[in-house]
Image (cartoon, rainbow, N blue to C red; front, side):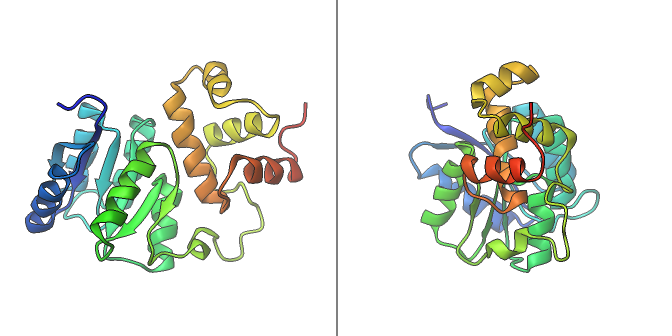
Amino acid sequence: MTAGAVRVVLADDHPIIRDGLAALLAAVEGIEVIGTAETGDGAVREAVSLHPDVLVVDLHMPGGLDGVEATRQVRAAAPDVGILVLTMLDDDESVRAAIHAGAAGYVLKGDSRQQIVRAIHAVAGGATILGSGVTHRALKAPGEHRPFADLTARERQVLDLLAVGTSTAAIAARLGVATKTVTNNLSTIFAKLGVTSRTEAALLARDHGLGRR
């Protein structure tokens, strides 16, 4: 195992794509594939047991769980695992469902190797990233007038603390979780709110009543 490498689990039901991506990433310095899965259930098992930095998962998975539900279960069971969706689906509904389930990134199989590698590193670092064929408009649910309706109770806690200027490390200490877990929570919050920075999220939160002490 390479010290400091981003540890990745790949989940895709097509062996040619799964093996091809594993081979592609094996040639990239700083990334190490530590496991693979061919079903949504397998993706959850591998993510929970191996605890990778990033789970790369397709949305169409055979039997059992699809990629969206697998994402939701991994987010609940292993919140410090970053989740990157890699799929052929570029419609707004699919993007929205994946992000709202907890994915921090969404890229397309038609994106370049450089884009996919960049997305893996971004998600490992706690950032939110959308591929070139994915639009930010998909993150905003049509007719949604409550900006925090899709946030979990924990995400609202994190956002409330962020709104009063609490640092990531301090939020982690306050909630009794790992700093990386808070970083991943923030990535999901930014994606759900359609913002790109802590400042934007904090301002939106305060505008809607959070962060008041």
